[in-house]
Length: 74
Image (cartoon, rainbow, N blue to C red; front, side):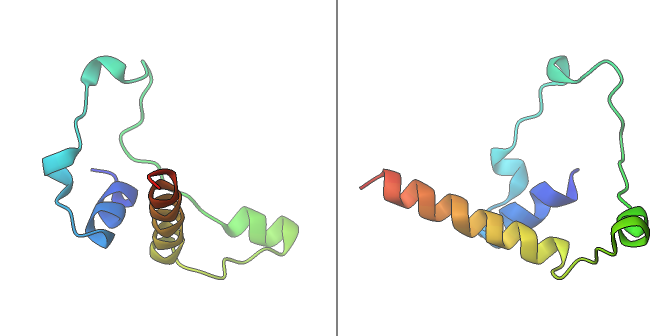
Protein backbone atom coordinates (compact mmCIF):
# COMPACT_ATOMS: atom_id res chain seq x y z
CA UNK A 1 0.00 0.00 0.00
CA UNK A 2 1.00 3.58 -0.51
CA UNK A 3 3.61 4.85 1.95
CA UNK A 4 2.06 8.32 1.85
CA UNK A 5 -1.31 6.94 2.95
CA UNK A 6 0.26 4.84 5.70
CA UNK A 7 2.22 7.83 7.06
CA UNK A 8 -0.85 10.09 6.98
CA UNK A 9 -3.13 7.62 8.77
CA UNK A 10 -0.48 6.80 11.38
CA UNK A 11 0.06 10.52 12.03
CA UNK A 12 -3.56 10.99 13.05
CA UNK A 13 -3.71 7.73 14.97
CA UNK A 14 -5.97 5.79 12.62
CA UNK A 15 -5.63 2.33 11.12
CA UNK A 16 -5.52 2.77 7.36
CA UNK A 17 -7.31 -0.52 6.68
CA UNK A 18 -10.30 0.64 8.74
CA UNK A 19 -10.89 3.69 6.53
CA UNK A 20 -9.34 3.26 3.10
CA UNK A 21 -11.39 1.54 0.40
CA UNK A 22 -9.75 0.62 -2.87
CA UNK A 23 -12.02 0.10 -5.87
CA UNK A 24 -10.15 -1.79 -8.60
CA UNK A 25 -12.66 -0.50 -11.16
CA UNK A 26 -11.18 2.97 -10.69
CA UNK A 27 -7.60 2.00 -11.53
CA UNK A 28 -6.13 3.51 -14.66
CA UNK A 29 -5.55 0.96 -17.45
CA UNK A 30 -1.76 1.35 -17.21
CA UNK A 31 -1.55 1.65 -13.41
CA UNK A 32 1.97 1.24 -12.07
CA UNK A 33 2.34 -0.75 -8.86
CA UNK A 34 5.33 1.11 -7.45
CA UNK A 35 6.64 4.54 -8.35
CA UNK A 36 10.05 5.68 -7.16
CA UNK A 37 11.06 9.31 -7.11
CA UNK A 38 14.66 10.39 -7.55
CA UNK A 39 15.51 14.02 -6.81
CA UNK A 40 18.96 13.69 -8.43
CA UNK A 41 17.84 15.35 -11.69
CA UNK A 42 16.37 18.36 -9.87
CA UNK A 43 19.52 18.62 -7.79
CA UNK A 44 21.82 18.34 -10.81
CA UNK A 45 19.86 20.71 -13.09
CA UNK A 46 18.42 23.18 -10.59
CA UNK A 47 20.64 22.90 -7.54
CA UNK A 48 17.53 21.95 -5.54
CA UNK A 49 17.76 19.89 -2.38
CA UNK A 50 14.96 18.74 -0.12
CA UNK A 51 14.93 20.51 3.24
CA UNK A 52 12.36 18.25 4.94
CA UNK A 53 11.67 14.52 4.85
CA UNK A 54 8.67 12.87 3.22
CA UNK A 55 7.23 12.23 6.67
CA UNK A 56 7.59 15.89 7.68
CA UNK A 57 5.92 17.02 4.45
CA UNK A 58 2.98 14.66 4.98
CA UNK A 59 2.63 15.80 8.60
CA UNK A 60 2.51 19.45 7.44
CA UNK A 61 -0.11 18.55 4.83
CA UNK A 62 -2.20 16.70 7.42
CA UNK A 63 -1.95 19.60 9.89
CA UNK A 64 -3.14 22.00 7.18
CA UNK A 65 -6.05 19.74 6.20
CA UNK A 66 -7.08 19.23 9.82
CA UNK A 67 -6.96 22.98 10.49
CA UNK A 68 -9.02 23.71 7.36
CA UNK A 69 -11.56 21.03 8.30
CA UNK A 70 -11.79 22.36 11.87
CA UNK A 71 -12.32 25.92 10.63
CA UNK A 72 -15.03 24.79 8.20
CA UNK A 73 -16.97 23.12 11.02
CA UNK A 74 -17.24 26.35 13.00
